[in-house]
Length: 496
Ligand code: ADP
Image (spheres, rainbow, N blue to C red):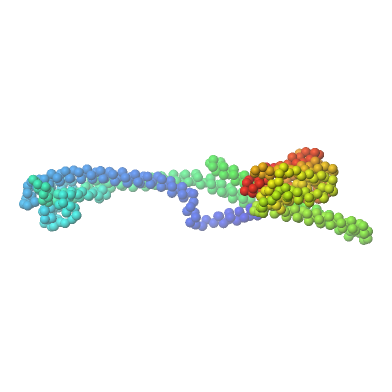
């Protein structure tokens, strides 16, 4: 526990340095704020621009249509009065002046030699004008160009001779409608003010929403830091939002699991120390009592030494089992998979255990429904089956039997080890797979058990994605059923 507590504490310390880092820009708060502001302002700006532009386009379009109509009339009058040659017609002068004032426009009358014979602003009278619009008007193409932002429009139209299609001049009218531009600027100002107000509101809203989302997250983080930093309360609380509540629940479940792992680790260390100390203590007692006596009879000396050897053997056995358990219990422990004949494997296990069985007068029976092979780790599986069959012999009665049955379907193979032995009391069944658990400690000691055999077996079965089940009745016997996938890619489960 202390190890992981300290590690997270040091993270916490470094996290408190409030140095600026670009990583902070990727914060949830900033992202939410930007999204809210953009989602309010962007539609406002885009729709405002569209409305403003279409308003001034429409206003300019109306003016251009009116000016074009008026210009056509004036052009017809110019053609009828031979104004282009004489430059003298009071009526034309008046019409031009009226048009100039009505539409705030400047009108140029251009003759067929591209000479400006009349400029209502009087700036360029007598000058020659050659422009794209004027030349295309001489080819019979009228032009109108307008710019909504400046409110300026330029209309160029040909002047046709009265009784023929001949183009005898060009009328160029430039309109600078201040009404449209003023209105455009006025609406634009209102619009900019609106954007400013909405920006403030959007910012306020963004802060409120991002706070509502981020604050509980920060609280949750602080609770986790507190808990991992060693706070007494090993649970975190968050009732703000449904989602955060779920995260808090998951974190609590993880903390509970860590506590269980931590407790079991502590218990394991305590058990290991105890188990390793017991033979040592016995050896010490035996050695001390030998040393305490001046003259030790040879028989007693030998007896004590042989007791000491068996204690050393026991110590060795425990260490060996512990190493095996650690090996199969590692998170990334690997299996050395190969295709193995399970019948041959079980036969070999029984052959090796036969001397112990004979010594205990226990009959070993093997039943196989058909020979089959499976993808397994031969060494580990041999150890797992050996542990179960050896237990069935060890915890059996004289002149009884151990029956090992093998079967397989298309997906799994099954090994059943049934004995007619002493059985396991009901309340102990669920504990037999725990490390160092022994139903009858004194008896196990006699039979040489370490209490690690079934824990090792369970780990090996789980590594093979298999299941192991136990059925036992005191004084009647015990049956273990193992199910393992025939092919290593298939998964089973871990029901026990
Ligand atoms: P041990 O090394 O003590 O045999 P195991 O982990 O193999 O440890 O078994 C744990 C305990 O379960 C044993 O001490 C024994 O009490 C009980 N046990 C296991 N198998 C049997 C069995 N076939 N019949 C009765 N008791 C059993």
